[in-house]
Image 1 (tube, rainbow, N blue to C red):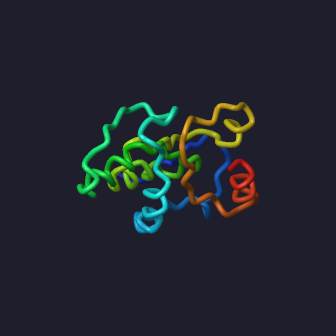
Image 2 (cartoon, helix red, strand yellow):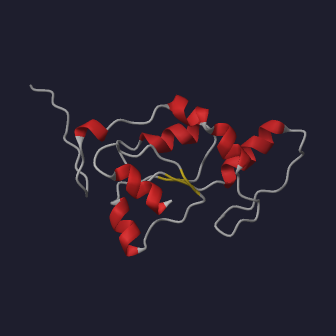
Length: 133
């Protein structure tokens, strides 16, 4: 019996050297920024109605800020981004195996508040991502 790793398929060209997941510590490093720019409670893209809580309860305050974000990472590797950001209290994460550049071209980029990504370094991915942002 042979044990082999199944080959993942993608609807776009991938470069092996770009195919590494962002580690949890990288997301932890940007938490202060994400918490500082949380959308207001009644943001038009926000699909949950989170009440204002006691401001002295910083745990709920931070959790509510994170629950109000809709984060978008357009560069799918193995899909672990959703789990990592979820472990930090974010529950609205758009991270799907889609062709980001086709979505931009077609005007079908998913609704989001903030784009959080570590784009591939090969070719012109970084430049294209910054142009979109």
